Image 1 (spheres, rainbow, N blue to C red):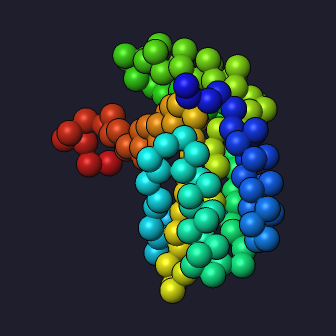
Image 2: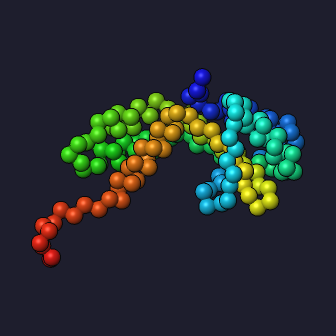
Image 3: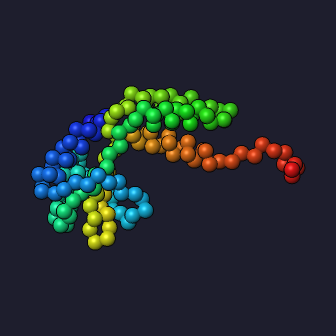
Length: 156
């Protein structure tokens, strides 16, 4: 069953990491860093990931979380409303507004450890967080489109 809030998973991760005698550092590993993403086979794959980190000799694991803030949803809703398309996408607006029910919840977790110049990552996300990210990317992509309303023969 998919989780709606990863806060309890985060708490379990913290305890499990400490139980393995490892330290935790709050940090987010960006896409610019060479990475290998861990593919889990079950819902507790993060435990295997932590055990791999320990086996690789990692003394600490990076950890990052994203909690959905009301301001994030308000920004998204505003961006959806601001789009000037004749076919205003009511579904996108509804989806953005529905995200308000998830404010205050943890939607994304990332664990990482460095080994031989590569960051190994474990990532977990809720369905609503994935939807939030997709909507944000769509609005960012649409915001980059330049529309020229001038006459084709008008060189002014």
